[in-house]
Length: 348
Image (cartoon, rainbow, N blue to C red; front, side, top):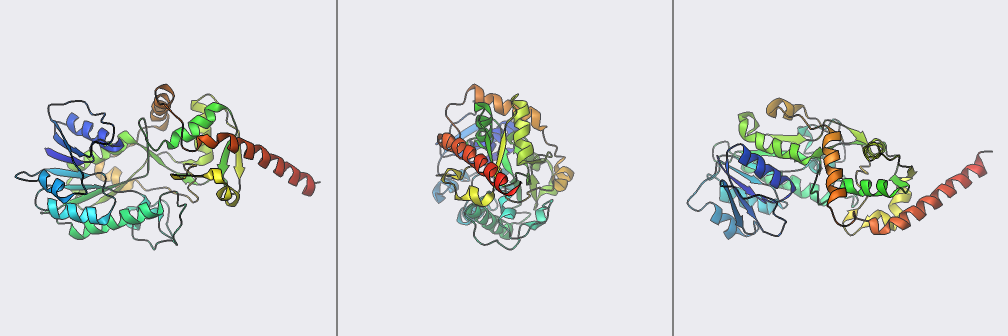
């Protein structure tokens, strides 16, 4: 197949392109050229530079040619999706959109395990600290609305994948490294709230494999799929699991969510920096993707060991918010003393 990948050098895209090449496809990767390019030269790989927000750049991709499939890995605004749909209509055999489970997590009510049909739930009041991205989820939902409206099984057949938190080596979001770095420094670990809400990550290679597998399933046309790890953790369980992989026994210190939210160290220029503080249970059904794409996830221990090795072996720098680590530890010690004093006063 002749395949176009828009945003071809991102975290998912790099793995996707490699898997498509391994399956014998010819791939054109279209990227702004601003991200690190980890793709190796390949006789079936063409790299093109341009900005997908520019109509001329997108139109140039289909001048005098068509594609068996086009993956849009980066569309974030409904106008971008609408523009792509108009340009690629009749020019692609499949149009595959990278969406997100955030389309559910901006809803007021959800029912776990969250199925693909729960994407239209009533929006919750705007919550700036939504751990799944309030604006992100709303805009991605709008992108989906545009594409489903323009979906046509003959001229513009659409499919979508909705990943949860993506992880693995080269992860620029560094969610896992946030906790890895704190466990390794040996200090106490601040846990927002009870730490009992369940969530799922997903290994980047599993996501890429799911995207590639769409092309092998006619049943996936006109469908959206959740993709997540089959393993489910609470934040407490997750941190303790990381500790066991790092041969450490972290001290978890819980702080009331309301208190945590008031702390300056709980925020960063990139938002709420304590990853997987999901604030409510977020477990996603994988029944549909298992049935249609024969999906199975990689065991956590294996891919997390590889992720730990990448962060500890070659990564330079710190996780987001680590510059406030000493403030964090100082607060933890103060919080522990406060609780002890409170207990002495009221529990006699």
